[in-house]
Image 1: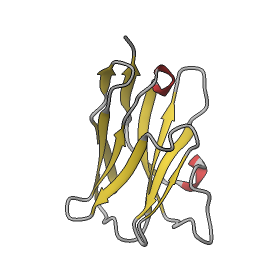
Image 2 (image 1 turned 90 degrees about the vertical axis):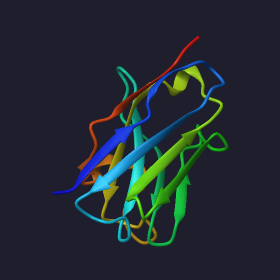
Image 3 (image 1 turned 120 degrees about the horizontal axis):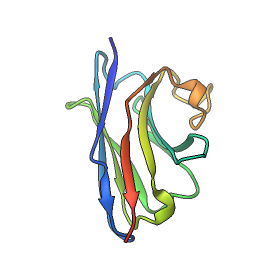
Length: 128
């Protein structure tokens, strides 16, 4: 049974930082991708970032490029999302999800339907 558990969310002031973690159990990180998505109230779930652990390639939404960094620790079966220079518009529930695609030849990294397992989410609130 594959399980993903997010942690690290919270309340932070604009310009601050948070580091989200996604602990994966029931499988290894070697053969698939882990994506980060977020969903704000009244909005659709959107792809934020993704790391394809087969080759270490990463993807980012334009809105977070230069501010967010995704990384993985295969020994700990954990993927991280370091979020810097946070803005109020980054406020959302953040989810990690596992995909069977590596997104080089198939799948779309920011398409929720290309992910088959999801965590429960962690709230990130950016406010003064």
